[in-house]
Image (tube, rainbow, N blue to C red; front, side, top):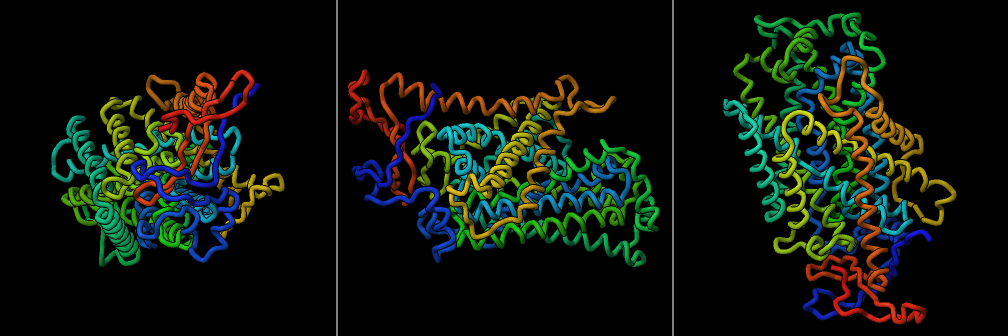
Length: 566
């Protein structure tokens, strides 16, 4: 007989002593009713998760910068040269960036629909649970492992360390860059774990500063293009001719073949990832339905405009040959051509600050995803992970993600192991997005009508299909053998990171079977899930064990002392 998790959900809090941290009896709507309630009530989704309004500290500006900071890290300063090399011409490269912006807009629309339908912390965890309901809690258990992999900030923290050292004119070493990486991760942990208001204000300020500087770079490039007499390229460097004629714009098109275009598109799609970042923290957003409908489009519009303008600026100031022939990032060539090589330290400092904003935004939301898994009751010691004690922030979830990131910083050596870690994280996210977008398509089919999916915002069906296909593309491409002469890894098989990412779900499945099936059978009990209220006013689910009386055929139940599954 197929294994199943034995769970009974109650609709009221259980009576408990104050010392246990639980409040009074309270009715709890089921999932289908809650989705409808998000659009029927006048609170713009605040009633959905029943979080006290005093704990909703994020407004429109904070939600915008949660997305903006998460999308823009270090890629825009170096990726354009990679895109130019793989696409063959400036014109094709710009078209590829435009295609990436359209795919990102599709992803934004998909996650706005999901966020307005299920306006609570957790993001994809909530959407997968709502769509893929059987076997019960299997998706939640599998998502735990993916959360730790996807949320790792190891790569960006190391990049931060390298740029800080460059800004200080210190030659980066493995020890020094990783030491600074650990320090910045610790800073993010303490800031968001103990100083919630300060942390939000800091990441908002870094986002505004990032937007200001990138806008200034864009304007400088456009000025150099339209008025070269007022802002000329320094005479020591090659004058660009990328926009001198229609033929120059498209020179080199088709020389990289279909494989080059696929590689360029693959890199660009990843450059726009982060549009779902505000969805992870909707329980802390004021008027979450109305806010997410505005914040995500505003942020992604700003990102798309900045990306296109920055690329035009780079190509207006730096020649195609210089971009392809130099080993330096294209942003460094831009500043060198206009202001001389002495500006490189200032650029490194700015990129470091840009990365810090990215780290803060990412860790802010990932800590809340882990907290949300604690609120579901499926983690060991769930009350610990679900709590906001002692500083009114999910310190336990943040600390868990901090430990994983530090392990990834200190563990893998440079080379194949480090690249494998990054690739596994990216591929895992592509798998999650594929399941989410496919699930959203299912929700609009007649077979899923009983689910009662009726969100305040709906993405057009063609948009959802486009987003689904783009993620299928990201899942399939790494499975294709690389062309002759190119290798993904020096010594590892090219398919290793997709294989590991696909296998990760087996770990969650094993935990699900052990916790929800094998242990109840062995201990002769069932699991009952009840809704409780913590001392901080935040509700959560708790699993309690109910012993079976006369397991050989009696069929009765009794409470097992200490049965709460914590």
